[in-house]
Image 1 (cartoon, rainbow, N blue to C red):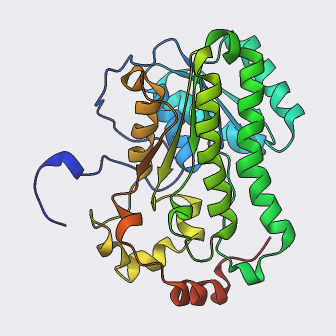
Image 2: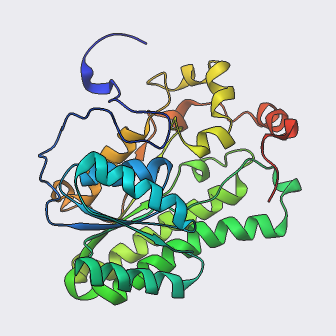
Amino acid sequence: MAQGAAASRPPGDVEADECLREYRHLCSPDILAGQVAFITGGGSGIGFRIAEIFMRHGCRTVIASRSLQRVSEASKKLVAATGQQCLPLAVDVRQPQTIVAAVDEALREFKRIDILVNGAAGNFLCPASALSFNAFKTVMDIDTLGTFNTSKVLFEKYFRDHGGVIVNITATLGYRGQALQVHAGTAKAAIDAMTRHLAVEWGPNNIRVNSLAPGPVTGTEGFRRLGGKFAEESRRFDTIPLHRAGNKTEIAHSALYLASPLSSYVTGTTLVVDGGSWLTSANDFPALLDFWAAGANPNP
C-alpha cells in the first residue's frame, strides 16, 4: 500500500465482536448526545461496531437480534467500553409483532428513539441454479421485508410525530449483477428503492432516510461467508482502488455521518463505502463457483 496522507488510512479495529481497545474521536464526542438509536443486527459485525461508535458519541442504544443471548452479551461489552446505556432486545424483523413489542419496551426505557439502523441481514454464496425457493424467500424476508417492517413500526410509534433518521445497510451487489448473489443483490436493491420512496413520503415528517452500502469488510460473518479470506489470500483486493478491504470502524463512521446533524440535508441517497471496489473488482463467476462448490456456503 502506498504511503501518503492519512486521508485513506483505515482507523483502528478488532476482528472479533469486541469493543475497540482505544478510540480517537474524529467528530465531536457529543454529536449524538441525548439521542437513542435502535439497531437491528446490533449484536455482531457491522451492527455491533455502529452501536459502539454511536455510544462513544453520546448516544444510548437498543440492539436487537433474534438471539437475546447474543445481544445481551454484546450489550455488556458496549456498556463497559463506553459508559452509555444499551438495551438488548429479542426481535425477528420478519414478525412485526416482535418489533412492536421491542419498540414499546425501548420507548418505556428511553422515552424516545431518534435513529433507526436497519442492519439485520442474511447472505451466503450460491448460484441461482442451485438456490432453493425457500433460501431466496428467507433473504428477501429478512433484508427487504424486515427493513420495511421495522421502519413502518418506528414511523407509527414515534417518527411520524417526532421526526427521525433511518439508515438502511445495503450493498453494491445489484449494480452489476454480482455472481452467486441474486438473492442478496435483489434484496438490497429493493431496499435502496425503498429508501428513495420513504425519503419522499416521510420527508415532510422531518424524517431522513438513506442507505449505506459497504464493500468487503474484515471481521464480519459476511467476509467469511462471501469468500473474503479467499480474495485476500489471492490478492484480489489489489484490484480495489484503495488496495484493501474496509473495516467495521470505517462503516460505523459512515453511519455516524448519516445519523448525525452533519448530514442534515441528505436524504433519499445511497452512500457507497467500498474503497471503489464495485468499480474495478472482477466479477469472477468461475472462481466464485469453485469456492462455493468447495462447501463453504451450504444453501439454507
